Length: 376
Image (cartoon, rainbow, N blue to C red; front, side):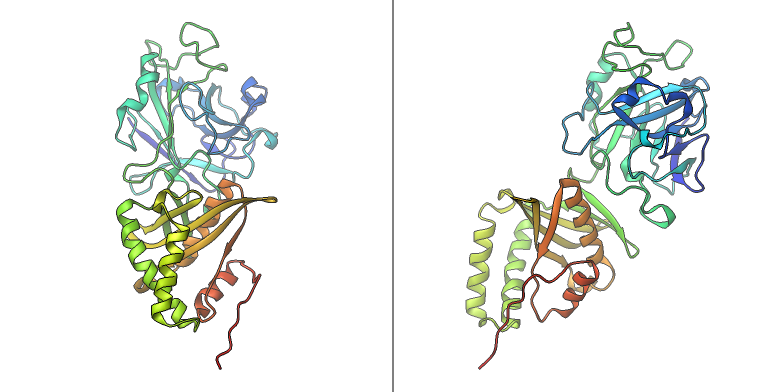
């Protein structure tokens, strides 16, 4: 039997739930000295629970770039406990995670939690579990960040992806009667558990069909995804982007087309001498579903007050403009930059491009310099 769960309103103080204070039953659990509460699976959600609830916690201060992403040193833990309501210590919960219930969902919804006997592999690579299976554990459930709500009343449920836009797979040792064995540090069931009732956990991975480093955003009805640009996409981009840049220079009145094309060639060669491998530069393709809708090019630079990003290109395919994709690309760029610890994003825009200027101002960008020309 497979059970799938998704965040929903109204919030629930009992049963399946996410965010807020941890259940009363684990408020004094030792794992909360180092971890913060995320969610609770309802009792009887699977035969192995034995009528108990399962709460999932993430190491306090965890960031996507941290090293504890693989078994047995995963930053995430699962604790089996008696059913109990949400407690009164919200400081033990993950900061900024909105409270909601976890309810069963059908096949039309991407589930946030999947409970079953076999994992859904998002990289189609079963070898990820070799180590945890070798230790004698069985698959219990997975938590998939693709299931975060991106629309409706819960679109602000979480400010950024917590463990890197992928799935975390939970494993445990089962008794003969099919219930989850209590695993204590140094016990015969596993000497790799770091706290009572903690399941073995595998690494997180990007969803099948999406490359590592994918970022998504929902804005103005557009569910947009950024994926790192491929070599083939870069070659196409470079050819068209140089010509677009040259024609924008001409439209601005700065110089004639021959000189503008030479300037565009030199500027691109100077900025991206090693193409996609150029240090400090990152380029993405924007997707709405399976369709390519635009691109994003950021340069990251460490300055005295922190990490800064400069947007060399925020672009939407011409035939798809004014449909919300531009706002969604900026929203995804901002989410990405926050996760990287960026303190400010800069960009430049040609004076004649009033539409782009208006969009940037609406998204909170401020003018810091103006370059002017007078025709004689």
